[in-house]
Length: 472
Image (cartoon, rainbow, N blue to C red; front, side, top):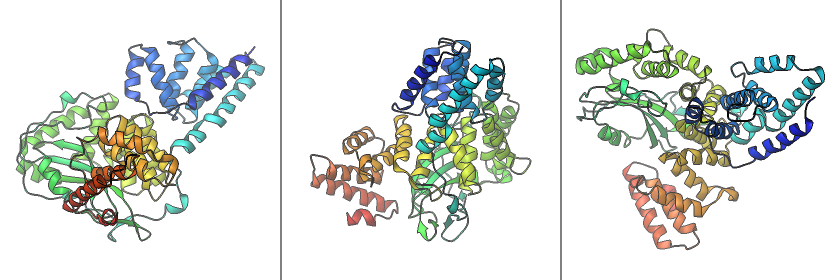
């Protein structure tokens, strides 16, 4: 006989948990807790991720309840979490449900099915997607972003040789993704092999950049030179917009033959390391190998080889592969709904880059229903994990949102204090600081003017369009 009182009590508790304050979880850390049998910490992490619809978290919680790992064994909880994972076709969740229900009496089976369906209808995938993730505007998908009338942006940036003595690894993301960064160190060439993801603003200026690949010589001068050069302005339907782009700089612009000629030792190191990664068996080895094919195109032996490997890993649940594959589709404007889906799925795992990119999409993408509230949630999550670009975007919403419920000057002031030493050269920092002096309870218009002048001067030095600031 099914204990209906227990089911009702659980449903009320689950609803209360989902209504609590959310922060995107760190699944990689949570999995380590589970592996080391720190089940209290694992459960807490999985519960956080479950609130955002993470199928892996659902599945792990189901296993914990099914086997009594750190919790009281409970078939009701197990089946409900398996049903939530099954909404995403995750692993064998549906098969486990079918096998379990097959062993139950007809009356109990019908009750469990009703409980699972009721929960999914109230707090399942559809509800979570509506509350936290982008709503794609289907009618806008046929329109593409162009760049000063051209369909594509230039991927390479040529510059003079740069000398330096820094050493970086083959995959700059190895530490973040839990890989063994000690296996991929390179020797020091004269010129850095640098790949950046950049956000191009409406005026063509570069506002944010993230180092996808940085090996070899010091990249600081190269980056500082590059960000002074405006890109072609992104526009859609005759309206300027912003867009993300991946650019190759320094030695990354070389063909295979030129790289061998200019830095044969670098070429040999890349070749040896890629062969080692190719033989790796872990998901992370396979991911780093896919990224090496993406970052060093001359390593590929067939068209779209890196893309195919990333997709295969994404389907296996590798968060970074989900993100890289989704971002590739988004940058190339090939399949926007699928791109956004993969970036969203990656965000559920707490990947900082994915959270920031998802927030940027929610904040200003022309292909989704823009939502400052959802964007602020994801910017705040990335900011709290140390992302300095996300902090600027979150503060901007807190000070400038048209929705007055999102305005939080006091919080913005505190956030500005927290990033003062990280953003000392960023014009937007001084622009937002100026606004905070204008809007805080103890207004100071002299500080407003002073910081706005700094913002304008520094923006002009970077070739930004500061006309709106000057009007203020």
